[in-house]
Length: 198
Image (cartoon, rainbow, N blue to C red; front, side, top):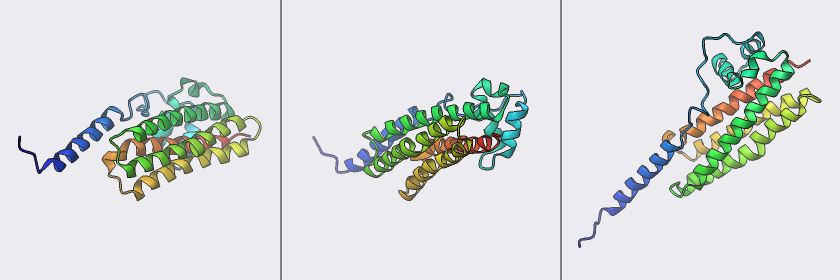
């Protein structure tokens, strides 16, 4: 039987197909994506908060809060802050698990694996921890909750910078960029709404 001298390109193609398939089956599902805004107008409180966000679009803000139907009936900033921060914790925890699964994929290159592990650490030690702290502080210390909600986005930013500095192509990390964007949206909402607590 003749050996194939061109087998390394075949190996590379096989690896690329394996990684592409993994990313396809593990891409953000509709359950983790922000829904399109429906035809119902947001409550006046949600409208007021989303008009004041600076890092996320109005529509992204409304869609993110719409993931919990209770947001439309929140009567004050403190109640809406709790809803938004619970959504932030849930979304970030799901994202951390997703990135961790990617990092454990044997098809990931050593460089990508290292960057993904860094992202997992950022999600665990900055993003999720900050959102949880903000949620716990809403009642007693809204100013600290405000700071923690804003600080949460730093973990997603550093994750994104690590991926960018590694030169990873968009097909490798688009789903993580999307999840980092969710952190920015929830951080912006959390910062804005906790700033409105009197």
